[in-house]
Length: 161
Image (cartoon, rainbow, N blue to C red):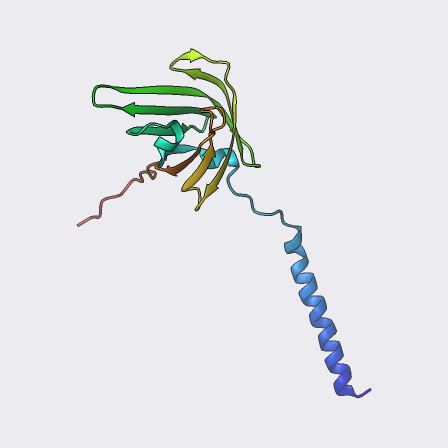
């Protein structure tokens, strides 16, 4: 074997060892983790199709998921003569498999025996989600929600003149 061929084989062998050793520590690092399913729900959510959810026009549906695992679900209907709203409160748990469990529910301050497990999915960097409202009405409508949580206000230092 010629010296030139031996040098090429040696160079290839060394480069494989150097790159192999250099990359092996990267494989040992844990996968980066983002916010949990529970953390992704925190905020204010408005339904874009409230009439589909409750079956009445001139209505609104809003979710408020707090970081202490409590929620408020507000369902309102406006008519020319009256505006009514029903307030559901309780505890929520969001699982990584796309289900939210709503427990300890009170309706307008009165304890309820209702417990809901609603499938949901989030889209577009947590800006929108779909929730299947099983048990809220007979036809289990899908609510389309947008996240309307105001961005955090940052302190702005005035510029000197």
